[in-house]
Length: 402
Image (cartoon, rainbow, N blue to C red; front, top):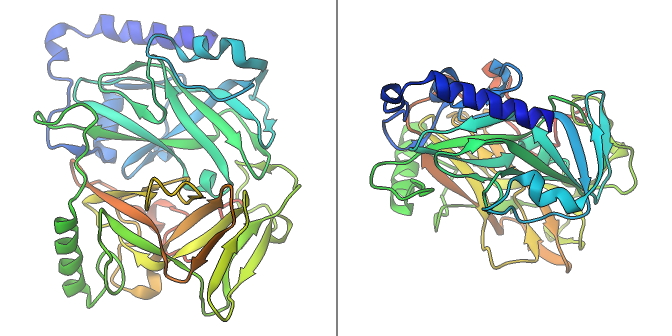
């Protein structure tokens, strides 16, 4: 509760120090679309994004902001739908079984649900809203996490003009994890709407424009557009699953009953202690066991040009037997190369839910929705800024030794 009061005091101080005339100019007017790093920094400078501690440059990605866990966590009996009439902690009051500190680290047990306060909080202008997503490394550990805002009856969506605190709901599935104060499991992507758009309306690139973009890039690069070869475009860029490879390794299946994984330890764990390898078969097929977790790769190499960002979404929302996207954000610059030897595949975090599920090589399993950035970012996803998954093929999270 102390952190919540401190956040509200900081918000109140900021409002008192800003005169009404200045407020008119704080909506960061400009082109609609996803805000790149330069505009996120403007939000920070104008105190539209605030934090209990100073926000570091490492948190600012090409088109998103990493969120940090605070000091306090709650084990709750069940997940819940936030209420438009209550704060998050008010909604959770009757569900809290245990309150604990994570300053020195704490283990979150698999198949349990936790609520953790975040250090960042918002006072968004009346032209900007936000969406949240797990970071790639979080999704690849089979950790289900969602961001919740006060008085907001949805997960992972922060309404336009929102002012208040943020919380993370965390539920480790296959592995127990150890978290700490300042651990980064989620990221926030800010979106500016145009004067003609309704609230929380997005500027998704149409299939027609996607085809044009793919053809344009293909001509420049000699055949590598948004993907290598022909692009399957229908309600977004469709991605297939790769069940064949040069070395015979096509995926990994999570082991049972492993030791907890510390989310802040990079290159620390042996793959063999946490994953069973999956090898190519003659028929290039795979049956997914119910309620098991798999890491697979897309059959295509994927490119996100500098002026765009993308998000992985289900190929068909009615196909309830299979979940493919846990961490869906793709930053500008991901896989942006004309050299296929340096190209990047999409990694698929796959879980078959209630029934065995049969898949074949190159079968469409997910799709990417592309969205225009409001401005070109000052930095792109890649090796130069220490991005972990550039030029990736089939790749586990950064916690494991290659």
